[in-house]
Length: 160
Image 1 (cartoon, rainbow, N blue to C red):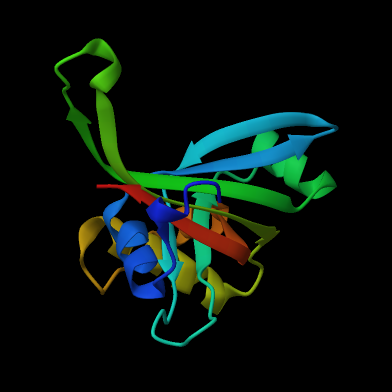
Image 2: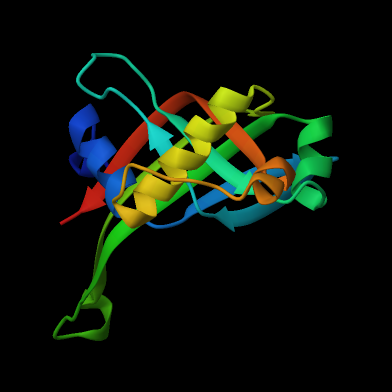
């Protein structure tokens, strides 16, 4: 990272960014062409364990371009940001933006195990609702695809 003065290395702080953000921009590669999509997400991470990495879950329909791309190439990059605040300057060149972000990469798999599928969907629902108990319409649950991003690397950055 070029701007090491803005780098976030504390896992607890990175987990806080993941918790406070509301969309994950997922980048995939479709036969050499970039493909990016914004998704809702949930995550699991014991950030108090030094060197641990999060697992991020997404949901989607059982057909579509995202799944077509992932069947050919499971590699993914992601970007999540929050805390945007415009900073006005006296001169035009003095304007800036405050933010906090995380970026990383890893590999995505479709979750096949029913218990893990429920866990992933529960994490996603908890991220947005703040609740911990959920019941799902069985027919909808069966049609919902849960994707699991196993993160291989993650970095944080901020401008305060």
